[in-house]
Length: 356
Image 1 (spheres, rainbow, N blue to C red):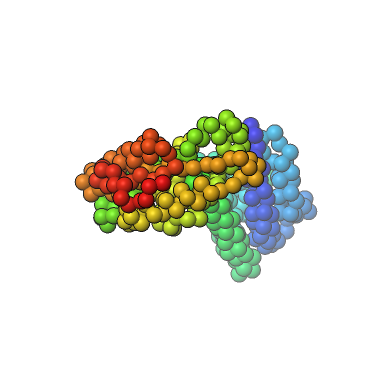
Image 2: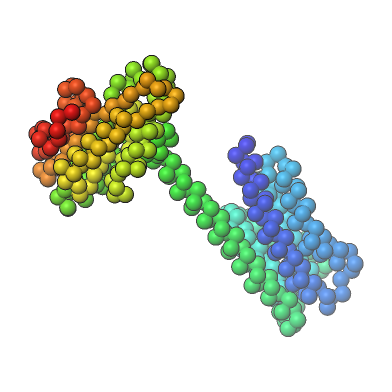
């Protein structure tokens, strides 16, 4: 119910502006067609109510309804009914009648598609029938120049306004869709790609590295992270995770792809970077991160274990490349932690770095 209410209020606000403009322009069009027919005062009063007051009544009706969405659909059918009524009242004068019916049809399609167009058309037919009973119309086959000019604002201004409103709504929805997509691909704590998004990007970068024959991948693990959480609390652990993500964002190239692989493990793709350069980059990261201090926990010192693997052109699958980095990370953790271990073609290559 809340979703329907929120959606209905938004719809009512959008239609309030377009209905106010459209009915004001329609009043000009209908008045020019009705004037030669010398209608009764109550007809003029009804025209003024429909063209000036009804948009405000309709908006308040929808705003105060339990389900504004349903109330606004009812309002649109009232619009269609009154449009048909005025067509009959105008003696089916060609241009004012076509302008009135087509503008309402345009509105119905924009709101509810083909189904609502047909429902609106039925309401217009009903309105014409009631108008026929009230006015017993005869067909007026010609439109005067004055009536033609009176219809022009409705035919020109209203479609432009409705198009602009639809464009603005489409732009807003497109931006919201992009934001939701970004949120669905982003880890909320660190702001880096989440596990699934990073794995998707790994496939893309694997294909690129196959073409360019170069690149490296790193898996980064925060040493003894469970102990950090148990000793200093999860708030301190979150701060450590955010510090590492911040450092990755600051020190990596724009083309590098960093993500949170899970828990305390991070991952970085370094496309086109030779292994020795990647090793130097990861070693600098490890060294800088180890020197960080934490105001909330002065005694907290954190180190990183990093497994680094060069792209292997013999690999037929990205997971094999990732597995090389995982093997290097395992070696880094089992040989003392706080170090970078490299692998090339699946084989450890310790000579790229000085011992820690």
